[in-house]
Image (cartoon, rainbow, N blue to C red; front, side):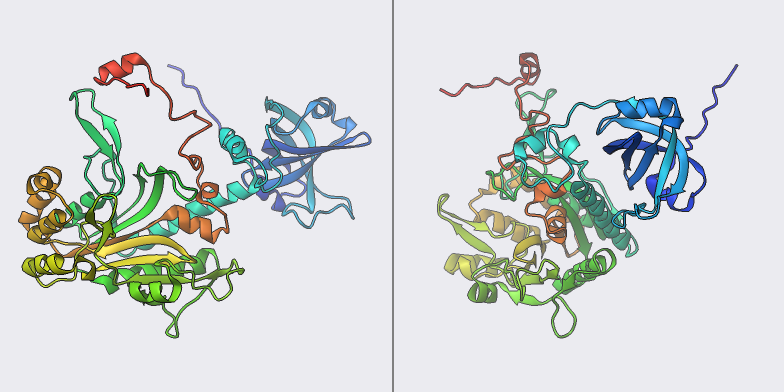
Length: 479
């Protein structure tokens, strides 16, 4: 029986030519630009590492004839010799600007039509709807490529940091149960169980608490979350957060971990950024009441110079109220979420305080703020099932509804639940700020528009009637 033998490609990246002067190399990528100087054809080849200038002279034969046909964004593979550029033609703004490749072979791998918009600039001036529709082209611009790569470096740093400190990354389900946690759920109909629905998670909140019951003690996940909220420029229907939960900890343990993580990350990946710290070199803490009094905001921008993009004013805002009044619903709701532990001595103490003055009850909650944006929130959780049930009922849920929606969690708490707490910093907003971008869509590879649409995939879209029938659903047309 004969076996086909595959040989490795000898292709190198543009950045690798720096120590290959005088050698014959093979490069592949996109034609970034082309210039004809008399009979000599110059064109820049772009790959994931950068650019290099290629030169095709008439004595290159077939390669020269092919070079005459090349257009921007065609995909090619070339072979040639790495040489010094002629004196006086060097490009100090290019990493490979001292060198060029004299082309001897060119193979066209794919042609390209004229692009729907230029990609040589920042792209801010281009209609965002068009950029979203052709996002795979938009990502080719250097700014977006940089953002996506730097985002990866940020999440890799987070994983490495937490892994070295005994945390275990655990993937939690995407198809889960609809529970009232603050925002609307995205619902997924079940084909096998007619009339029943899964929900996409607003966060892994209950799963990470169940992992604490399971004895994992230190959990994290870089996770996608889904919230069917009203449209707003800085929101996305799906977003990414660094989800962390720990057992046997208090607020200072968690804030201290987050402080060490983010200050270390900035120092390692963004050394030119300048965190604004207190006299002890720590991220400042400020109470909710003080923040509202001093800044009239629970996510204050504490920078000394708000025009300085390199200043990072991290803050921890602490001592939030547990409840806020929802006028439209005529009920008290949790400021953070109902799993946050109220600062009370007992279940009876909670009931008495809620009856007399709900607004006075403080929560073991803390927010993480950067330059006027909330980039994370966390709390010590309620691990007393009786107190948790009392909180749900105080928010207007009937006892039977609490059992129906959260009975699985209350049941788990009967089997030895440790005190625990955590935090969930948002990845999108942090990268947006650290990369000096105006909105989170600039740091997400395939974002939705501000009103929740995907022009590239044309989503949301209608589905075939046969699919609806399988799911036992019917669409009611608006009158």
